[in-house]
Amino acid sequence: MASTAQSQLRSIYRSFLRELPPISSSSTATTHLHRRLRQSFSPTPSTPPSREKFLQAEQYLHYLRAQRNYLTLLERYNPGLAMDASLDPQEDRERVEATARRVGMQLPELWGETRGGGEGGER
Image (cartoon, rainbow, N blue to C red):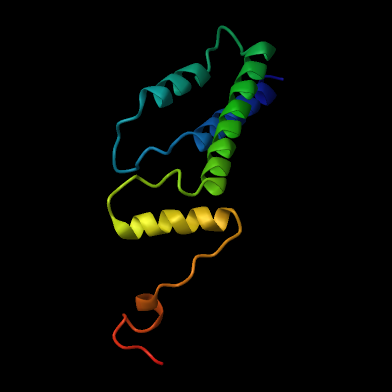
């Protein structure tokens, strides 16, 4: 029973690490969240983990997965949301194109983009 509990604990811990932002391998500094997570999952011989702790950890894990999925969907269906409001005309055009694609439209190509930079072109 103890080995099963330890393997479940390791599995949940690894799942948490997959959901959190990775730590760069070149740096040995860990974030406070990573340290706290490791401390929470470190085995203590005197008190084995209870069933409630497993259920609570799984619930937190489901929450992290749901948040990651939410952000992925938010970025996918709101393409201009991640773009900064800058003064660059190219980025502004990309934002407008993304908005047009979002509603099923396509912007017409500009004369200079399709005809060799706008130098005379064909007639």
